[in-house]
Image (cartoon, rainbow, N blue to C red; front, side):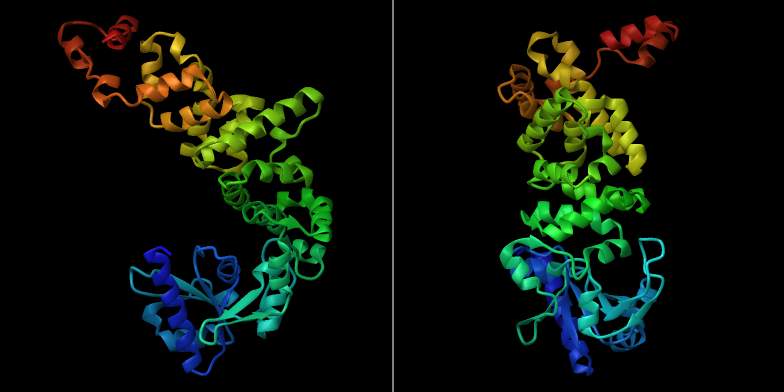
Length: 386
C-alpha cells in the first residue's frame, strides 16, 4: 500500500473512531469496502454515518471541515496535508430524480436505507474498521464472490434515478473483470439511449477510465453489446462487414497498446474509422480538453509517417521524433504493426542524445532579418533548412 493511501486510510479510521466516541454510528462505505474485499488498493476512503452535517462539523470543528456538499448530507473532513481529506456522508434516502441525474431532495435515514439507494450491490457495502466486520444489506459480498455487477433492487429504477449508472455498469464490469447480471444488462440495453441526458463531462470521465483500463478492448465490446456505443460513440459502430472487420482490427490494436493513456486509446479506437476530424468531433461532444483532443488527432495524423519512417528522409521524420507525444506514437505504431520496421527505427532513434535529434538551428529569424532577408516564403524556407 502506498504511503499516501495508508495515511488516508488512517485518517478515515480516525474519523470513524471520533464519530463513534461521540455516540454516532460510522462505517467505511462504498468503493473502498469493495476494493478492500477484492484485495485491491482503494483510490480513496469514504465514511457514512448517522450524524447529521451540523453534528459532523461539531465533532471535527468548522475549521477542519468543508460543507460544500452539505445539501446532500456530505461534509469533507480535512486531515494533515499528507493524508488528504475524507468525505463523510449522512445515511440518506433519496427523493425522486426528476432530471435523471440528481435527487430532488434527500432525507436522512438508516444505514440499510442508505445502502439500498446506492447503484450496485458491490458498492452498497459498509465496513466497520473498529470491529473489523462487513455490514451487507444488499447481497454485495455474494456478488463479489460470483464476480457479478448487479443493480440494487430494480435495475430500471436505479438507472432512472441516475442515467450515468448505465455507463458505470459497463465500466465496473470492465475494470473488475466481472460479468453483468442478466437483468442489469437487459435494463442497460433497453435504456441505453437515455444516457444522452448525462452531462458530457461525466460521460467523458467514465470513458477515460474505461479506455485506460487493462481490459479496454473488452470494455468497448461491452459498450457496443449494450447499445451505449451508438448513443455516445457512434463513430465505432459498424454498419457493414467491412466496417466490422475494421472494428475488430481496431479492438486488437487497443488490446495491444503498451501504454494506458486516454488520447492514445482514443486515437486507436476512433482514428482508423474517422481520422483526426472525427476525433475532434468526439472531443467536442465530450467537451474534452484541447490538449487531449489535439494529442489524439496528432497521433492519428502522424501514424502513417511513423510506419514508414525507415524509408523516408530523416529530415521528414525529425519533427515527429522531438514531439512530446512521440512515445505514445511509437506505442501506437507497435500496436498497429507489432513488427513494424518504421516503429523500430523510431524506437532506436529515441535512444540517441537529444541534441542529435534536435540540434540548435544554424541560423535563426533574428540573424536572417539582420542580413536583410525579408519575411515571406523564402524566409520560411531558409529557417526550415537551417
